Length: 395
Image (cartoon, rainbow, N blue to C red; front, side):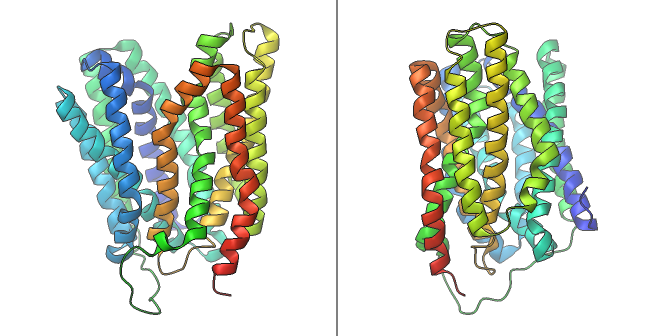
């Protein structure tokens, strides 16, 4: 568990908000289409536009956090997430849906930089990556618990159940914000010289690494978007196998993320971790491709093996992302620099639904092979780009 007092409060907030988040993301599509009455096309377009708002917001909000304070910015964005999550009860058409979704996604994507800056500021240098790993493990426990609650709401499918879901999700964000304001304020170290503008956009190697790690972030959509479509459209395997694979991933991350993070604390180790991550994810794609048209025990065994490789790749990806983004950032701009890594992930999440639908649902087996090659791009490029970044850092 997280040892230090302030981090304990952040851990509690992480768990609470993850429960609400897991419940919402299990049921939001059904809520918006069947209960609110929006068409699937409208929901898809709206979430794409909301994702674009998240991409646009992440880096500027991180830049602002370095000036107003990471704690204050993080708490404010959590409050905005809570208000907009509850505002879905007011959605009755396309316009109101777009407003709520865009504000909610901008706030959600914007928390990445301020949150990480706050955690890093509360930790000793030696413990900061482990603390990030602990919080991520806790979040996966919360998501799993929330998914159970979301499943109950879907099963009941009544207005009180959906209203309770919205209240739960909104309330967890507000509770998290309440905990955040109780931790000590952290300030970025004094800048050696006055500066204006967003500096990170001129840091080409760091921006390149953020883009490469964003590609690996597609692994999240593999399980949430790609695999269910694959199982339904291209195999004879039981549909529940998708949920089993997600469960394996959640349990594995909760169990092993901290241990993996302890071993990847420097950029060169993170570059090696990125290489191994991309290879593991590519191999998992190839195993999933081998299940085309199949059913029975053999296909289930292959999917479980692919899930194990995916878990390995995801663990290494997350730990390597921290091992690159934290040591390579200047100490006086943590929110800004962490925000650009959050932007890379937001770009991937925005593009992922269309990409997974095209490759996995549309192309079938060749789509898995294409996705494997996509994951190999950061695997191959990570080490030379990391060396480039190290050459541009102060000694």
